[in-house]
Image (cartoon, rainbow, N blue to C red; front, side, top):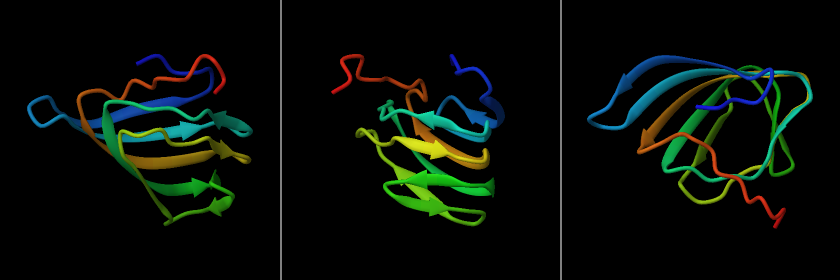
Length: 100
């Protein structure tokens, strides 16, 4: 998976048969993840830092779910570490290159 500069990802568990991946993801301060899709759903729990989603600021213990439909943008004003579980074909992000 291609990751933007400063984003760190660690795969803790992967089952190719079911398409499940357990991940730790660390986002640097000020990073914004644009609206995107991927061929999986995912659940995220904020472990440390802050994550802004749909006008709400989330902190440690807060939970986010996203299906294969477009979701985001997500913003990380002070950086953020999340534990995530992804289930599906691919976690590779797809962005709308037209800006729409």
